[in-house]
Amino acid sequence: MSALGHYLEEEDLATVAISLTRPQTERTRPPRALWVPFELGRPFGPPSDPGFQKRVILAALRLVEREDGPVLIEDFPDDDPRARPDPGWRLPFDHAAAADGSAEVMAREFESEIDLLRGHHDRWVTQRGYSTLGLSGLSIADCGRLVAGQLRGEVLASPRATFSPPLMLRFAVDDLKAYYLEAGAAGSAKPSSRQLGDWFWNATAAGAALHAVRAACLTSSDDRLKLIAGNFMVPAARVLAPG
Image (cartoon, rainbow, N blue to C red):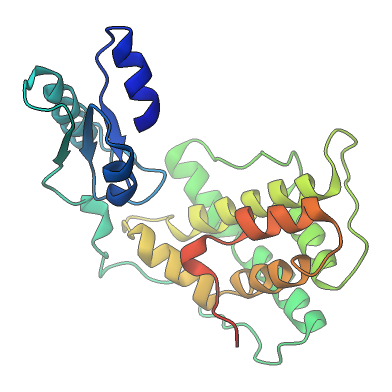
């Protein structure tokens, strides 16, 4: 988007980029950019906080009034207020994944864990009136079975003719991650995204299963499957170091 700003400015259209990665913005040198210290995917800050988001937007638009340049990169002064951990948040359940590590045990733990979270996710939907699930078009149980089957080494098949098996796996994984994070955020506490991420990736059978499925897919001869596993299954910051 920073590079695109140069072309739009040549057509006399004023632009302001929202930057989430400052070194990249410094390399592309946009006409104007507001760097924000938020996590990827949240360029305007925390969800459901219109007041804070308005501050970010106004800070960006004010750069249009500035006359210094030709390259202007301004830093937004405040962190995401939801980035701070909530000490009142509690884990949805006290259920550690089995230490056995075998694919079959991990798959069974993962599938039973999905059921443990149903009440929490129902509570989220009741509180919020919506859910972000639905990308795969499958029930959450079927998403779990698809991923568990991949973990067990079964031949990957797509239950929907319009989606290839690798794409179906990606969508099922996305729905599972949304299901866990929504369930984890149910209740009156407001856990930070890091709290939820640490719980999901480090303390659930689902997180362990996705790490294992990713590793297995990366050895596949299917280039599409390797691409999806390598880029979309586990966030880069959560990929486990070898060994």
